[in-house]
Length: 618
Image 1 (cartoon, rainbow, N blue to C red):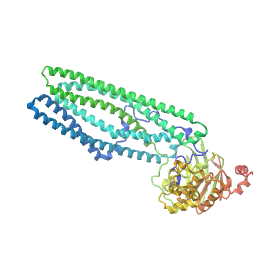
Image 2: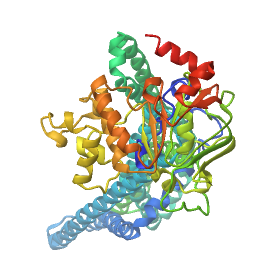
Image 3: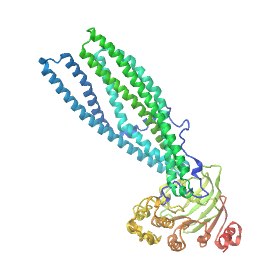
Image 4: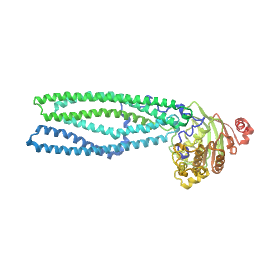
């Protein structure tokens, strides 16, 4: 997101030599970092999601009513079966049999309706919860300081936003429903087992611990494997996004086979982790089913002996058999649900890590308001700064200078001198370790970020273009602008000269990242954004670097109009573009080494004179 909007662009500042290289820094969120997540045996991460669920108490209430109706309908069936068996199938009892089967048909109808209602309610809840969660995570990601994105891999972050939230949806949309249904069925079946035969049900209760203990023990292992599978999948997604984003560079250097091999290795690791998780869950399921049904078979054998001895009726044994089957089926399903919950806990844990990440740049508790209208004065007072991703590398060292309202000041110096870092600090993408940056005499730390950035328009060197129309890309800096205002800005920046030749004119879709536009065309759109924003402070970061000579001539003329009555800071490598600036500040190694007009700096000699000699030697 570009800074024209008043919101931080994660990578807009650190794109040059004086900014951190995220590729070297590594991911900010380590998959296997100890101590950052809950214990492997805990489902505690899922509790973080309960507030999202409890917003919809009415739908939860309906789902619970339908759940009870479905369970009750199912538990009635064995009673009817027992009565039919015990009363026999003789002709004189035909009416009795017809009556019971009619009741059973009614019960099935209630079961069908309640099951459909439950399915709709829980599916709706799952979809709604995951939509809310995605919105919350995405909004939080937009609010995080650029220092987070200096080290985080965007592909890994997006994997959490998509794949992990989908896993959470599966839990709230189906797994929890299945768990509750089987839990109710288990409790109901056990209650009916006790009512049917206290002796046999006592034996059932004795074997339940043998079934529960493996669930807890193997559930821990499944949880660990689930987390590993999600982390490796996210890593492969990050690699894919980074490679596809830079596909032209990959192809230009002929690195397709190497990148494909690396991705294949990443996907193989993801597969191995997923296979290990599936193996663990399969073993857990098999163990639970064998123990549950094995115990039931033994108990039913004992029941059969009771029937043969006349101590129990065949119908009672049949009723007990059905309830035992219900209990065993519920236990088997719960074992699978436990694995799903462990998987979801891993996803919730990863999402919680994102939500727990705090922004480095904080809003003041009681923001100071700028005078209206803002004048755009800027002052650096003994500012020292190092990027958080490389704290030992000091980019600015006790830097001090001021820019008066309406003044045009150029910032020049060799690569790595700290030029783009100045813009990052003015926009408060970062805070200095020492010293103050003031805007209109106010410490920018005392201003709300919205008011500060609304007073600044930025034309970056690397323009961000969105997959939208030319018109909408310009309007991005001020969404409420009218078409007429956007067109006026476009004409001032000479966007109309190429937009009118496009198939759809200003309504033409420019493709992802503006792939159909040239570098100069993208930069003119950025200039039009700055014009439309109409802020008192204008920041130009190599704003004409991608323009050809003719386009640059047009844009320089537009800049002369744009710079009137506003403060302008210009970063430039080509000194010819800043010869007419009111003042030129020369930076080297994070400090001001000289300042003055072009002629004054040439006369003084030093770094500026050497740079000018190299560029104007012809």
